[in-house]
Image 1: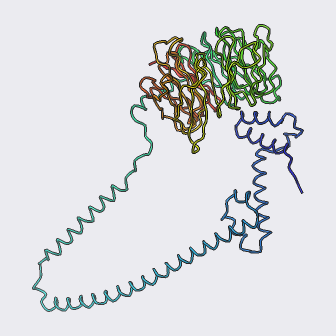
Image 2: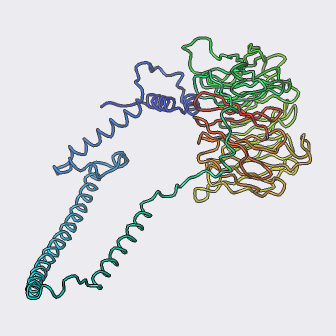
Image 3: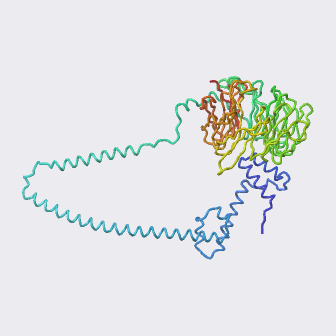
Length: 564
């Protein structure tokens, strides 16, 4: 008998994920399954191998059920069962299901035939009755003719007023009936329509610049804190640094097109994919750090020259962050660790191995302490030089955490009837959670703190938290009071990214519905919108707050001119 090993099955799943565009999932699965150690020659495995394998399995099960059946009619009745039945039930159960459904169908047909016979008999009786009535009417007409032939001049030139009135009445009814039918046959109201306000919010193409050059999805983008440089990271194993002119109208872009520097993450064209998953500029915008699926962090200067390669992680890097001083770089990886890198020496300053599952996100609290979160449902607050975490927070499925204030946000996905999302705000000073925020109906994908409140450039404005979810909504929260301020419902598909403007007055959001909206935080409504040609993975503002960049799944980066 032909058998399939677990290594072969893992490779088929890996190939399916990669071919279907689930690049991140493919490499995460590939790392944990040890695909890089596989002896399978990928060149001889055809595309869609897993789907073909499953289809062949279904065909085999169908054949098996037919061969094991004594009922010849079963051959024609496989339309009665679902593909899942073929996988979960044996041949005898399949035969029983088919037999029951066939019997039910025969009963339905019998009932239908009985009704048809009854209708047919009734129609025959009605036709016979109509024939007798017509015969009687014919006799009456003949009698009328006889009467008229006796006195042809008596009613000559006369009309029956009642008969004419009846005709007019019938004509009126018929006209009214036709008018009503005409109204009913008109166009039905559209289910979705854009209001004049939303139409006015749509950005014209003249205010949007399209940056082309990547050959795969663009996953990440980040503006330099100094100058007009924009960095982008893609699944094509490159990052790019674009120099964006001040004016991005079509005419100005034609005369002064953006210059681009390509940062290649491979040496040979046949190397395995090294998707760029995350990138971050240092504080003065002179260095760019990139992380990729090959487990390496790289540091480049603003001219696109590779300065340092940081190689110690044993899995894809999902998050990179510079500290404010710029002497340390923090990275989090699927290998369950976080590493602090000394930029002056290019060496690992300290590796933190406190998680039991992939590290999803990292962020600094100050220049020497930071927080990490993981799919192990834990948040670890660590400090350089310390061998144990300063604090540990536990919960359900944590997605993201950290901010440089005493409040640490912990996201928990607590399933209650399959839908409830619970969010908790924790205080590092008090070592307890302050608020439970529970409004989303599906998983939360990302969160962002507003650049407002004490200790920011906008100290007199309220501190706000934005959460984006697979339920297609964005929620704005009053963190101090623990209450919902607004629920933004302008998207139709999951929202993957949100970003506050530098002054905290606007929020940009990007969704899989291919639309980017810019919302007024104060008024809670859309002020600008742009529709692209692919799902949006990330959005970000430049330091002046007059341009917004968006990364698209159709391999482009769009720059929007935002000047209210």
